[in-house]
Image (cartoon, rainbow, N blue to C red; front, side, top):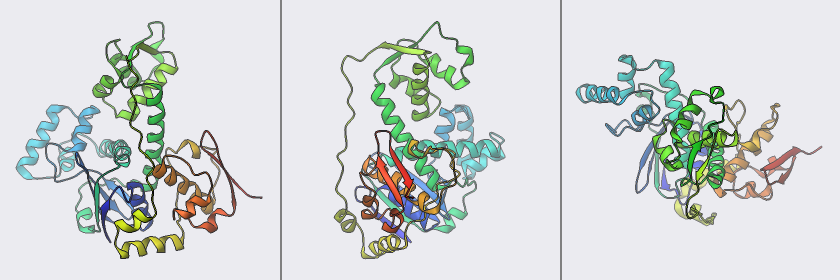
Length: 351
């Protein structure tokens, strides 16, 4: 299975759904005007997000330095070794004892969780998926990560990040409250609080943080809400983020792809989408109801709702829109009562 096209016609969320649903193995390459990314899949699961063709600009190595898992000097050593023997940097990290297998696995997954929301925010760019199982098989270090779980977690992060940014502009300057008892804070919270000196803006704090943007913003929000920090200075003018207009779909999908791919989509729609969203480490607020076993039908509908929201930045007003977009078959919707709310949605099985 080889697919290629433009992200304006077919979003990354939809591409990931297709690969996961068909349990495909291969390499997905994404290209924009300013950046590139590579995702490796094995039986529908993401197993790596590092482009092995990169050298000094290896995104994972940069992440390991930014999160203080490796020092700049250690990365220099790894790059020097790599230039001599052409080995995979992850093989050098393990063989050289820079990190244990467990530490590296955790870092690779943390990097994927940080990267995927950024990729999902791309509105323009090209993609190419090649069912190249040999390339995936040659990877030295693979960390199987459920694509559906990462996708939902990334959607949650995008939603939460947008909410926090509306509350706290990147131009805000923060400072700690002297009266606050800081002993009860976690190490990462103390680290972020230490960056709030009454002179740095949130944008500058993000640039100095050893964590990703989402985690840093989340901690900033929590510290302010808990009374450990406050706004020292408001920006002179409000900073407005550009708003993307909802793009019409339907005909664009057909125009962007060949007949063979359209046949695949039609076949998927007729078979129905069997999505799995249980056993997730983190879920969207709309899914964070009390944990009770979900039927296959409810799992399918809830995941389709999250996919619709990722595509259109809002939950649908009615369930039948999911079927119209081929996110789920219409028969699966008849058993449920759905109401869109200000907090998300309510989904109940009809008596």
